[in-house]
Length: 501
Image (cartoon, rainbow, N blue to C red; front, side, top):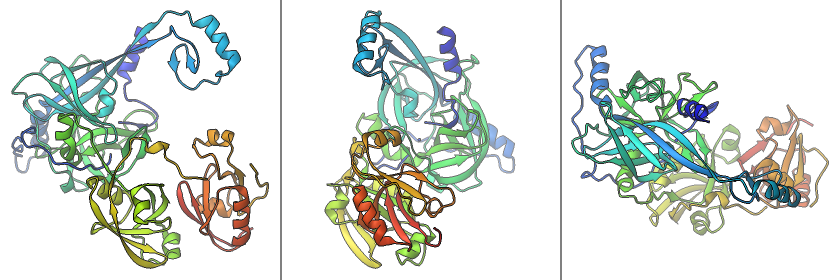
């Protein structure tokens, strides 16, 4: 087990696909009393190598290694819904198997297992406040911070925000080296940046941070919701090497200012492949004072699901260009519902700000204070409409909210086979709806396939006719016939083109 723990320590953060750690903009200002501002690093003109060296030397002093420990206790309890005391969904959760495990394993003594984690952070104030990722310190029973000069400190968590994956921890002391938070909105694609962190630092027995240099590859990248309540919707992409253990370390410009907090890599092997992501520093600026105070971060919320427009949807809704976002779902009792927003509306402006895509709306709404009255400019049935909405506070149990949806059809329509939702199908496709119609098969190359529909899609509307069961689905496809059809699903709107049978 010890060998396994060492392996987990070295391999912390490595996984196939997305190695997570991710973002959405929040409101609130930054308390100047909490975040001291250091002067920018002076760059020797005409000497790029000296510039990188100076930034690395200055900012590197403020980068720390973060080691965490979490004690998990297993065993010594009944087996209902458990594997030897580890809570999870069990395939053996029936009366016979529960009795079997209770009889044979309930007497096992409770055992403790130590889980270790590794990450990085950056001092943002001389009195010991450190900015890092929430996933680095999540569930930690013990946090040890090691400075670049080798000094070790015990740290406490001051505040966390899982949605943005940011956290502030604190070590006791004074006159620590620190760096300033820069302006991430001023970043340009192609601009040089430096990533600093401590990948495998404890395994290598060296507290000094690692420095890599690269450019800003892209801005406003979205990885969507890829882990629990985290939402990575507005990230900085860089080719500066980010490796396991770099999570929580700073992405620094050549003025020595932190412009991002390294949070994820995109990889097919678990190692560096030239694509890394960082949370913009301006997001941290908006919420860091609240994190220091231990206050909850509140995001604005409309209560809608929206999607970007493609060429077919733009033409269908009578727009001259792919601008705005399409409302595909309105949550019952949410702010949008109360304001009169409907499925099929196209949101063009939020409180005077032009909305070009989904990320733009999420950022604008997320920055809005709960209770604020905002003006929404829409297109409904090809006509302009203005509504006033009172922005709500994003609920914690958002995943548990759903829209309303046992007969089935054996006939294919447009190349897809649809069935009535059953508990078994709901479990198979991972949704909580109890009624409605779900696609269980899509023929390759069919109209449904070319439209982008996939197995597991739940159909809510066909040509604006509501679908809550197979009878409604059969009536809707009969009315649609062989013409183009507008389909609204749990993932948004799609247009099935006519022309194939």
